Image 1: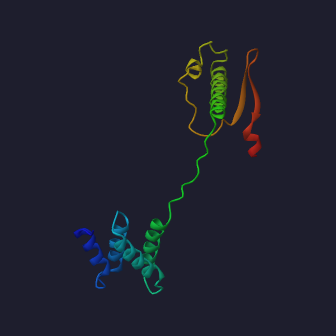
Image 2: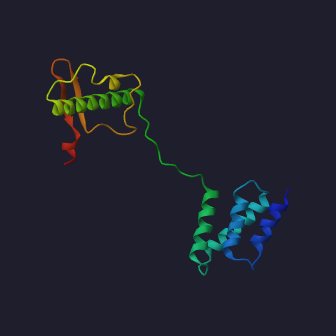
Image 3: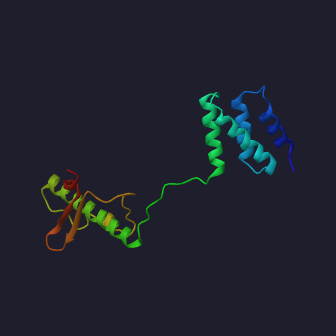
Length: 159
């Protein structure tokens, strides 16, 4: 069943007096929504005739190819790397240790005194959130005797 809208779009698409750009837009409007099989086939055929015509302006050819490509294949999305729950917990703990070490170092440098025991309560909170991506530049382990210990410096690897 065709509607008046579909009939109008087909009429615009078939009108050789109309600019190619507008005719391609009409074909795109037909392919962008549900339409009868006949209308979809006509729109696809028209787009193929545009992008295969080497005499046609490149902008129109590219628009026709882009629209055709959209309808012929599912869009490929970049794959997202999902960390396992254990890796995310490890990453969160690594950032927590790094930020605590950094804050402790900055406080010592600023005051020349050992920070009070509650200097990192916000970082030890269960609500603590690490930066959204990546790992800290330096891997720090908490040491109950000496405070912190640098285990691995990622910046040295980068050069």
